[in-house]
Image (tube, rainbow, N blue to C red; front, side, top):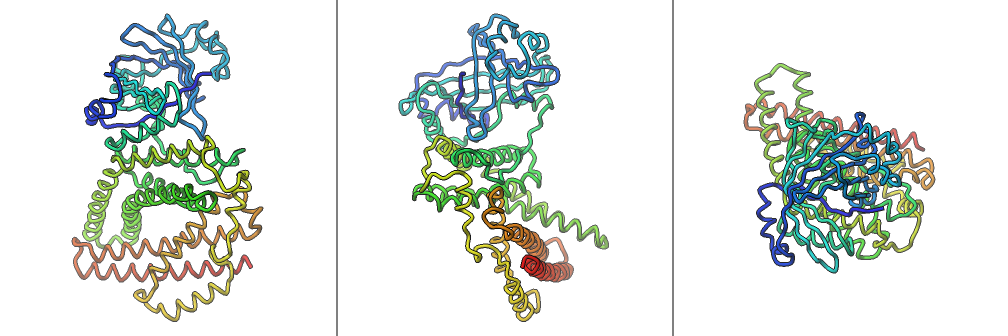
Length: 524
């Protein structure tokens, strides 16, 4: 079996000149060669190969060579390593004999050579101008390719198309980690955005067959045979969510994309915090660095998400009381202006070199985990690791003692008689702790019941309730404060809305604490 190991990056076309003149490539590699490449991807009418996550390609180069190539997808823990089988062919379409040479590949599961040869047709294509450098780096031989062209959503002249602008680093010989090190050197100057998608997938998007969508969130540690593969899988999965999300936001900054990306980063940071305690100091340092970098990304996402939540809430209130349309429109415009400014700041970061280096660093760390390069204090199974991480003290999780919540509510009623007296900062910290504990339990969900018994379900209910109820109260309070600061609203009306919504937030917070008390009592 052949294997392709390749890092693929999105790069803006305006930066191609910077790549061509980059000192690493200009001084450490021979002059590049340029190729014009035309590729056609073959599939059945019902897209059996694409659905099996394979691509069968015939590529013509401007030097007269014609190559048939089959590519299969990588594993969840190592998506950059894909199966690849390639050889010269004479015709412009795969023949029975060509496909017979692929009989020992995953293609055999799709159909026999004779049956496939009669049903395959070119469905997608690419045309690119490729600039290629061969770089000797840390004892490895790497090929750096700058591609510019089009992904074609069909075989006809008028097929829909999307632009291709990519930088690839492919291992030709030597240590695979050298590709990451070369990429890191280039990424000091260039905003390289690691991309989990292939050219075939981009062509399918052009055809309308596979719109770009956010992958499923990583939220539970998989039950792999090894700890390294389990951690690598969730690191790669969360990386794909954020990388694809950044690509989506650059085109259409939908509120749900912002929300899901932020959720993924919060869950990831909780997992990194858990992992700090199970390895040497080097592991803890890596976890802390990644947590800090992702916190910065999460803050920018959170700034947009805060506005989105307020817009949703303000809309529901306007629909419930449509008696002041002009003021409602002024508030909506104020929030829209705030969102536009925050989205611009977010996209500037997501398109920059700092974000690109962060994606690359996590991809390399995931490769370290998958390859056994990360050492724990012990070498447990995934189940052993989960049980170790679940050895919490009761006070590290929201208390299940009803008396605790009775005392807290008594203190609230005695000291927080008005919204201005409410301990809003402490409520925010309480919600944050509940959210972190909930995510920790969910990461380790397959082992929670065994380790914590009946308390596990109660902790999850209590954490979820606190996160939801206090979150609603704090979002309402934020809208109240923004309303008071909103210039377009008349002063008296803004003050009235602020007072009304602050009182609502106060009531929501009190109800949330009371629900926590009831949950604790039911668990007793």
